[in-house]
Length: 220
Image 1: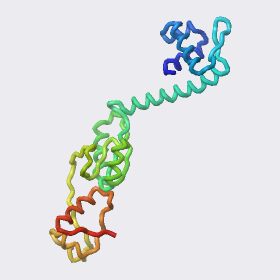
Image 2: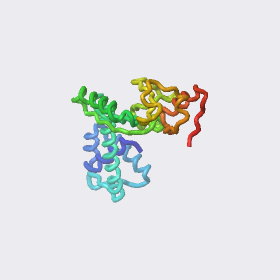
Image 3: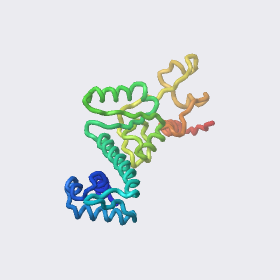
């Protein structure tokens, strides 16, 4: 069973005449007859019966017609949707980013793109997550593009630097380290620390910085 057979079947079901249906389909009558015959053999039932010079659907053909028309309608919608999504000037872009980029960077980026291409029919779908979740989403093709931290040993992902951020120590105003122009990591060790989760892209970066000081932190 193939799409041509299904299209031929639907056309013949509505025209109810082999010669006229073949002309409408731009094929020969023998080709149409052969296609319908093969379809009936596969279904192991008669879809049409003769009535004078015409043909009409059997009760089984009427049942089959309902499903075929619905299937072709869904398929046609899928084709149109796919073409729209993959158009050079339209479609949907699935974009993922880490939380810290959601207040300024992403809105400015998307706003600038849409302003530059006002005549394009482009929509964005946004997802927020940590670096590990985002990279996994890229591998599963949930996202078209993502903004996250660089992660080592990800050979299947291309990382392109777009910005740099400073790492700073955040303390209360009355803290002993407050007001300092710079702080050595070793100076932070006596104090409780709020740390990144294991799925965070910055977690291995911070771990490595502490390891360079000769200290391996224990987390609760």
